[in-house]
Amino acid sequence: MSRNELLRARIATTLAFMMNGFSVGIIVSQLPDYKFHLQISNGALGTALFFMAAGVLSALGPSGRWSAKHGSARVTILGSVAIILSMPLVGISFNYISFCIALYLFGFAIAFQDVAMNTHAVTLEQRFKHRVMSTFHALYSVGALAGSACGGLMAQLHVKEIIQECLVSVLFVVVLLYMKSRFLPASSDQQEPRKLKRPRRPTIFWVMGLLGMSASIGEGSAGDWGGVLARTTFHTSPFVGTLPYICFSITMVTGRFLGDRLAHKFGPGQLLFFGGLFAGLGLGTGLLIGGIGGEIFGWLFLGIGMCTVIPMIYSEAGKIAINKFTGTIAPSEAVATVSGISYFGFVVGPPIMGYISEAITLRWAMLVPAALGLCLAAGSRYVIRQEK
Image 1 (cartoon, rainbow, N blue to C red):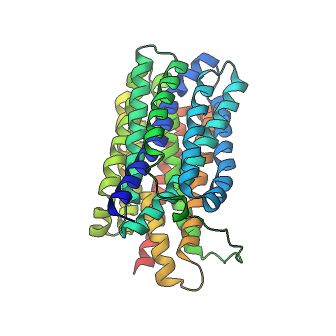
Image 2: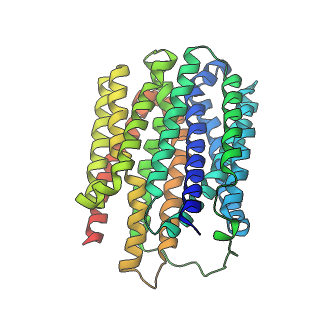
């Protein structure tokens, strides 16, 4: 395969990552508006987010199997179509039940595309012979940042949610028509799923999975509840309400672009330790200060601390499997274990935060991700010992 074909496939995969991030960013920016229009509580919004989480979980298995059978390129395209169709369904939600159903379908669509595009990115890494995954995830964050900013701006201009989603869907159709013929051929990663005896997972991978889950709960909560906290607790305008998540996304993007270089200089374990420390202390301090200024401060430090956690633990899981557990567990199985536990935090974290906020208010409920950041810092010492 020529280098030009690989570059074309890389551009298409980049667009898929940015499409996924943009769609999540714009829906997240609209959550306060849906909460207001539907007149629902934080707990009810948390339940709605559980429906989106259920959609995500429902898509993981089918997307993985279809990617193996039909090739990840085809499933990425199918997932893109699903996003284009599901976004307007969220916009036309006329009551709480339809809102929950629409979020379920949207969650299914983004996860269906997510698994396939990550599989395609892995195939590209093998063909390029160097790492590109971190850059793809940074560009996902760029898409999420752009989507959040776009949603906040259109909300400030009083553009209805259904109009926003239809405009984005039309844009995505144009993007899909451009990228659909530029992926690698389906034969590049088609394979028949093998039925292997499930290996015993060493304790280190469960620990790393829990560290990833601590980070993912913070990431998910920052996105889903940042705007709600700003607008309902600190009474900001719609656009100002998106600033905490925008600042969080900026630090996530910057950190992910620099992550590999920082890990090479300081070591992944040290990066995890100081990341957890910055996230926990920074977010906690911002919440204690209060106001939109305090929230922006907290979200900035949360992004600085959490930006490299997920890429680092995935990378370290594979490396530890090769160096210390050869013959016990394959690197791919180690990464699968860690990523599965980590993903659970994205799924259950934000909804649970809604229930906690019903008891102690949303502002103080966000101290939970701050505490988990400090737990991440403490647990990273175990990873550092494994590196020696």
